[in-house]
Amino acid sequence: MPSRIRTAQYAAAIVGLAISIYLTLYHYAGIPLVCSDTGIINCGSVLNSPLAYILGIPIAVIGIVFFLGEFVVLYTGNLDAITIWNLIGIGSVVYFINLERIIGKICAWCTGVHVIVVILLVLSVYEMLGKGAKHKTQG
Image (cartoon, rainbow, N blue to C red; front, side):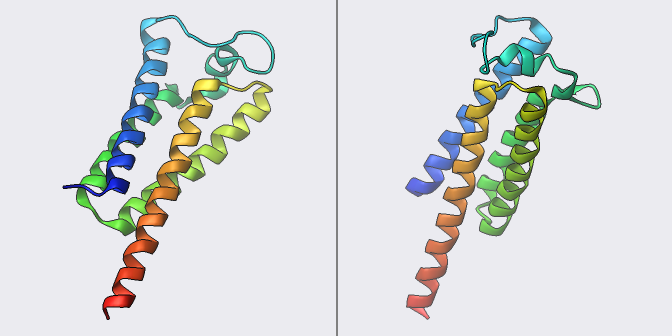
């Protein structure tokens, strides 16, 4: 039975994957974007910016790949791999937030994904520190 931390990680990854799929469908299927389109919070301005693509691929697709990778590393149970994967995610978040800064608008959905990636890293570090403390008390 998975720990509460692992269950929370899977739940966060499911939400992140769902948002990434939604944003990908916006790009490819033209589904409506539920987000403000005026002011600083303007998902459309961010998602339609040329900066929202890497090698012609919407960043949302990269989100899908990231969260599928998250499921793989969570399944392995390797705390080092989980933490490293989430550190890569944080690096991506910093890059994507910088793109929003350059665009001058904030995508609320993207921010939700950013928060989820931060939560995943915090949970993985917390789990790693907890395992380390258990080993010290047992040894």
